[in-house]
Amino acid sequence: MEKGPWLWWLWLFILKNEKSKEKPKQIAIVWTTKNVDSATKNGKVLFSKGHKGTKGAVAAWFFDGKKMHENIVLEKCDVIVSRNELHSTGNTKTSFCSENEKYVVRIGDDFKLIAKNDNKNALSVPFHTTYIPISGKGLSEIKANRMEVSGKIMGEKVNGTAYFQRVFADSPLIPWEWGLFHFENGGILTYGNHNIFGKSFNQFLEFSDGNKTYKFNEIRIKMTDNDLPVFHVEGENSSEKVKVKIASYAKSFWEFKENVLFVIPESVTYREYLSTITSFELINKRNGEKIGMKNLGAGVGNVEHTTGFIQ
Image 1 (tube, one colour):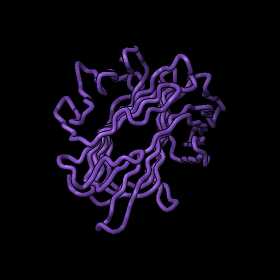
Image 2 (cartoon, one colour; image 1 turned 135 degrees about the vertical axis):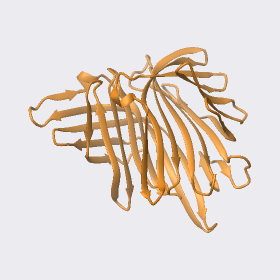
Image 3 (spheres, helix red, strand yellow; image 1 turned 60 degrees about the vertical axis):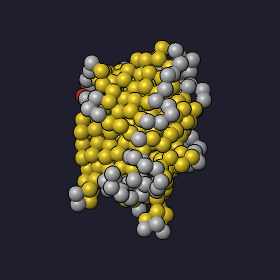
Image 4 (cartoon, one colour; image 1 turned 90 degrees about the vertical axis):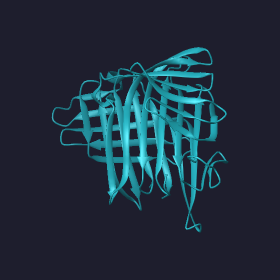
């Protein structure tokens, strides 16, 4: 890896919580490698200039329905990739592999989660995109917005849904906002926005009720200035408009630091907010028909909000 490029694989699991449906369980694990001077999570340095190999790391958190367990894994490691498997070389064995058209993620001995593609919804079909804002440099992403999940956590059977992304970035990382939500009845909502010096670009907002997919090009995202913020997302196209209110119930964060020419400090703070959709309204501007929470069921997911800049 040359100076600058960044590669990561991320799984997000959203699991049912019968004891508290307002606070679903969630697990996230990321394997990452970057030639960066320092990356810190909750005060612990993961990457450093002296680390040999891929200068990689693996980190995972688990919200058990009541409490956030920030660092179930947090280690420097090499990230070993073959055709059908990725695994880490740290003290806690972690891996992600494909087996018989399913994807198996293991975190130590206590977490085994099995994801299978859910192609019933057009937005759930895995896809590849590229975004190149600078000559020859940008982002390359592989994503699967929704999969069905089963597995065991500490011997207890679990089920729910999952999201996967693999990202290669060889352009500077600038602040972004992103959200992904799964509805009880099979719907999906996802949005994204990059923002620098108050200017938004590379925006998207997509929603599927399980049958039809809606795409919006006039997008507005606002958040309250709270420890656990509320997000307001709105979008509009020629035929419909949508309004969504999102409330967070837990959080996690990363901080990445780097020095340009060993002098000028750069940093990105990357926050994840576990969230539920508290209100949703899609209105057909021509006939007034509406789609709401009553049609979709509960919506749960994750919001990313970053600040700062890093090359």
